[in-house]
Length: 318
Image 1 (cartoon, rainbow, N blue to C red):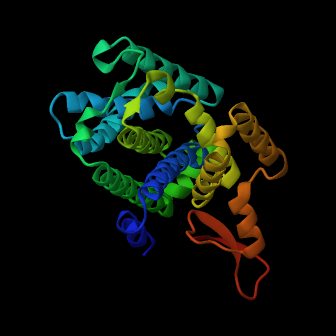
Image 2: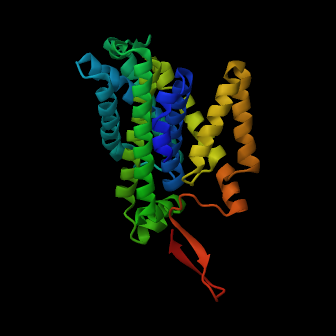
Image 3: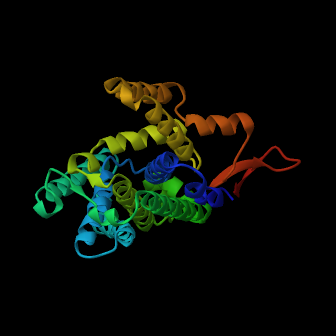
């Protein structure tokens, strides 16, 4: 019902609302994908901008070769998944801090290659001219609907993955990879699956960002600020939960919309807020809500529940 209501937004609300909601949905995608890696598999990446930038520039490259712009967005997201699969034998060998640094190095290398390609604008940036054929209100509506479709599909895929036994297996990998492997968990394939899914989602977010703004530069689309935004949203919302990153994206969007014109103070405020949550509410807003209200909208994984008439607890799949 929520998805259907959101689908009708371009028909009943103004252009500014459609544009803002498109940005919010892109933030939701980014937060959910980073949380999938860090919150459920313990893969702390600071290089997801590799796929954000690849998705955006892949869209430009495909349109330069005659592909329709919105089809190029979809193909670029799939291409980002292929890139993640190609990089996985290298980066997934790394663990902990090495994985974090390695993912950042890959992002910088890909950004450098793009900057050296003058056909993609070099370091000055490039526009997605193919969308100029659409009237502004039509372009905004199509971009919004495509962003909504990607958001729903990615949330559904992740939810089904976490509801399956793989959800518990991924959390076991996050808690202790060696112990999980000793119990028969297929660590390699599961990390590969999640890494490719996150690459697909972040690639889609990058391509949709281009479709929304129509212009990109390597320094911004491959910038480390994306990692800061994703960490902020997940930390505020609640890492390792399904709903938390969505809540965190809404909070970040509200803060960004209200205070982005404050310049440096806006960035300082974001940093202080993140530090405050890390110190005083490390499990995030959503975990606080679930503990106080005993509310589980989209239960995933396993939890302990007391059986009637006994003092013991037994694990049950939720």
